[in-house]
Amino acid sequence: MILADPNGVDQMNYTEQIVRSLDTESNCREAGEPMGRLRILLIARDANPDSISLDLEGYSHAHALAQIHDVTLVAHAANEQAIRKKQTFFHSIVGIRMPWLDRVWAWSLKRIFKYNFHNRAMTPFGLPFSVAFEWRVWQRFREQLLAGDFDVVFRVLPANPVVPSPFPFLLRRCSVPFVMGPINGGLPWPQGFRQADRQRSWIDRLRNLYRFMPFSKSTYQGAAAIIAGSSQTYAEFSEYHDKLFFVPENGVDGTLCSENPRHVEPPANIGIPPSIKSARSIK
Image (cartoon, rainbow, N blue to C red; front, side, top):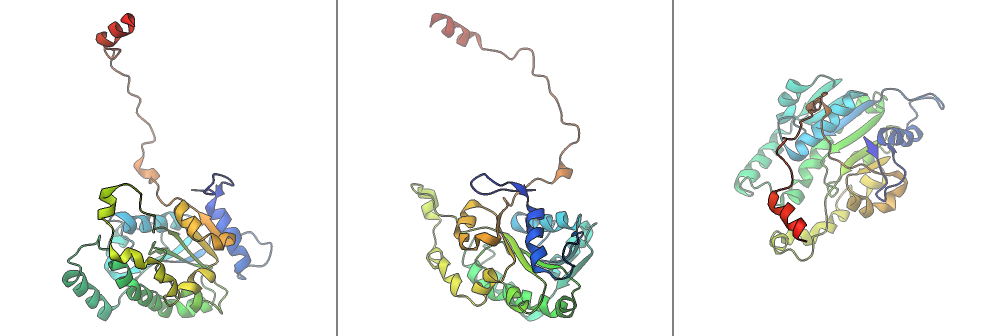
């Protein structure tokens, strides 16, 4: 995958560039020693190869990284079985359960949101659940992180930039760097489109309040690298330009593409219709 400046300059392999950033953060290796396979604790709560949208995208990022690094994938226990059916490269897969909070979430999804996943109020409602999930991940891996068993903590999901992470704060006395992304969201509403105007919600006016949420400031100040999935998000977090990387988040799995592209000869009877030929001659 290629890392590109939003203005179209300074393209390079984004893994290489992020690794350069991490090399200055981590003291796990002696100076000057080349960096090989990283031991990555990858957090993607909703990653699921059988799902769609961000859930599938998060899994795809994790699966791609696992082919070149030693990835321990941490997801919600509800997605663990689907991941294990597909996995071939992960170093290990860990499912995290939150029995009491999971019941609250399931009840709220059914009774309050009526399974309407397009309801944008689900984002602020889900913030405490996301922080609680990462707190459980910290409890599960705390000893290993402090012992230096991982080179980096990488949060791929959630992708929404308004969702904070407690990890930069929890890792503040640890040599393990924290990376997040690709983050994306908060695109401005297009002007002059009535259909888009009808999709507006009162919750949209409160988006910028996320900056006052617990861990919001430490998430970005404490991160070693931030990956932005769009030029809009890159611009929004430009104050962190020294550790901000632009990586368009979508891609196509190469295994879905044929190694022998088809070449189809056009039918012999395709040409310029007689009526057009006549019009040309009259003109």
